[in-house]
Length: 301
Image (cartoon, rainbow, N blue to C red; front, side, top):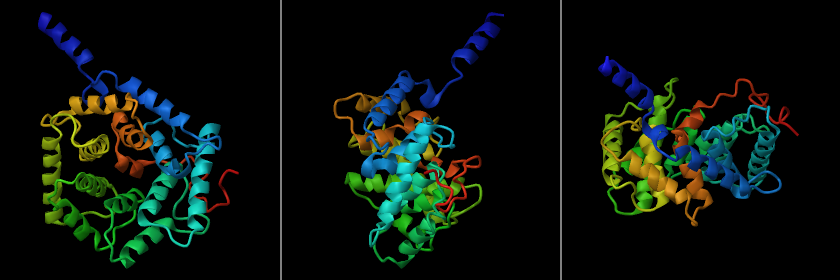
């Protein structure tokens, strides 16, 4: 009888695991959301950071942009305006275009029908026509938009994952590459599906290495630590026992509570506190939103 009671108690108190079970996560998340909203301008945007901000709020489940909340519609409108203004320029970088696409996706604008522009196809074409290095963020954005990758994607990702370097920015790139591969592997429509055994070997090797270098709860600065953590979450490692999740989350929460808190760290950490990563942009559901098929004519004014 005592054993049965003990099992029942354990089931009740031990049902939460992973990030949700770590003390202080909810409070840290709410405080960071509040801080982020305080940085908002009077026009309900974040200037050049607007796309990132709405992505962070969506991934934190603070906003779903379903067309029912006036405050969210104002933020969605700013996302639309910032993207439209950027398109007036003579050129737009792949990285910026990727950010805009992610922002449009979470606010339920259609990046394929944006004032007569197919931003997803534009991004894909720019990658195909370029001989320059392509940031893995671009491939992640294409996957989030359920767009197939150009042929060079696999070789680009393999190159990034195979780099051996002590520079932190290389770890940042590799974390983004892991997320891009995770997105492709998790895409139910098999869009951008990877068949390269080399890529998968490098992918799993990089994940294992991330878990080792983050054993003390952090690696390098807060930005790199957050990116590595998102990469691990994207690859299904939240409940793995071979890396120090608790120490990592506590380090990230301490960063949010420090006087040095800034926009970029908040943008990267907030999704983690909701057990999300940038690949969750691919799961946005805009089926009930009037903007879902809009080409500019149905946007809120």
